Length: 129
Image (tube, rainbow, N blue to C red; front, side):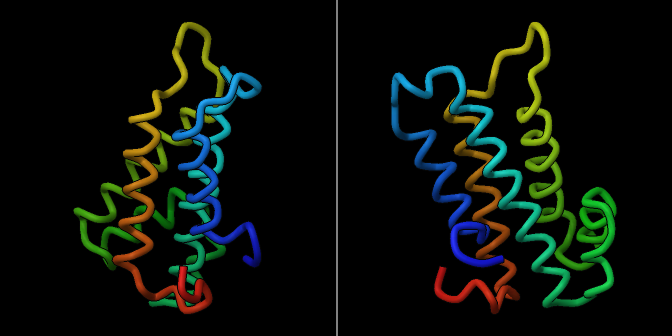
């Protein structure tokens, strides 16, 4: 991951979408922010495994990675990451009769991803992000 596709850059863009009101993005920004945050969490988890305790897990499905995260990072942090990923995944898709996530819901999920990134300082390639 380089440039604008680092977990920190994706989270910054997602947070920016949640905090800026723009008529041009009305109705679209919640799902776009959810997609950016989900890409950030997936990138952070991949990077965690690739540079950390079990590089072979970076090639597994995200669900498998999240299950294995419980053993390494502990159930509390893994639970937050897993539930945030599931919520973000659901928010990325349009479901009939379901509202898009609110800004505060998105910011909560973004905070959870940032917590994982800061707790798992096993991200040497992320530099000073």
